[in-house]
Amino acid sequence: MRPENQSCVSHFLLQGLPIHPDHQGVVFALFLGVYLTTLLGNLLLILLIRLDARLHTPMYFFLSHLAFSDVSFASVTVPKMLMDMHTKYKCIPYAGCISQMYFFIFFTDLDSFLITSMAYDRYVAICHPLHYTTIMREELCALLVAVSWILSCASSCSHTLLLTQLSFCADNTIPHFFCDLGALLKLSCSDTSLNELVMFTVGVVVITLPFICILVSYGYIGATILRIPSTKGICKALSTCGSHLSVVSLYYGAIFGQYLFPTASSFIDKDIIVALIYTVVTPMLNPFIYSLRNRDVKEALGKLFRRATFFSQ
Image 1 (tube, rainbow, N blue to C red):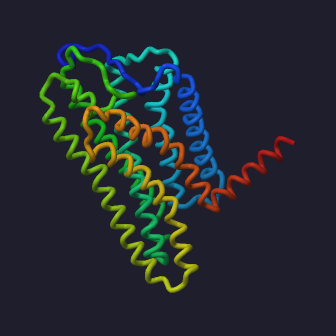
Image 2 (cartoon, one colour):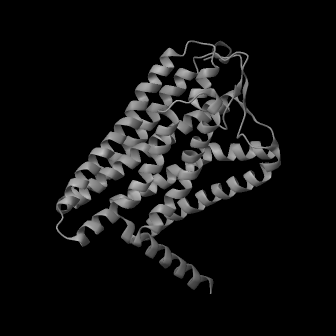
Image 3 (cartoon, rainbow, N blue to C red):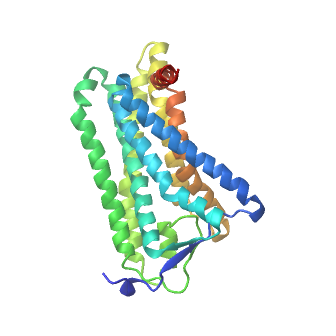
């Protein structure tokens, strides 16, 4: 495939965040701290799950993959954003932009499928507790994760291959801090009707349908909880879902706010702010949500610190 047939643009210019130049240093330090916290929190969570035998359960198996996805998701956009803020060089090569868009879509979709798999795990744990170990076998968990990766790859490949068929002419400025698919389609001087159709169709499959599955799962969970006679049992059931519900609210709240509620061009800053929530803030908060609300994770963290203190003496 010859690039001259697809595009006459060799690079794109990222506008970046709408920040006053006097505040660049403070904002750079803030996002650098957030990114480092994201890396440390998620990698520490993966380490805890691998080292502590009590965390070798289906829920934590999915959580370890979600933590890896969050690290990768943040690493797709944040390092480039930080480099642009530091060097003031906001260009990105055509191939680099396409690659960034591919991995951004890939890990966005992977998060959606993993969160849905975790919702199914919670549904089985609460609605069918006696059959939990026979239903949530290791083979089924591995299959759910493998299907999540395959579907995410298929989704991102479909968008990327279609985008490479488009031409980009004079305007190469992307009003965003990363190569967003919607922004790239607006810059194209080709017919993008097929791309928009695929974007809508795939979006329904990878975002809307998983969200509906989560709602159905929690509908059954809610009905089951209402039938529990004791208050202690209700509190225990709710505690097993609280962390996951928080992650669902953060993730899908930001996604739907970005793509389902269109805004006028004068409110482009709103799209950037929402994008920051689910690309920067949410990956940082996920490990804290699961560690602060989960006794097993807190105990595993204390055990790791005690072990590290013992070996350091």
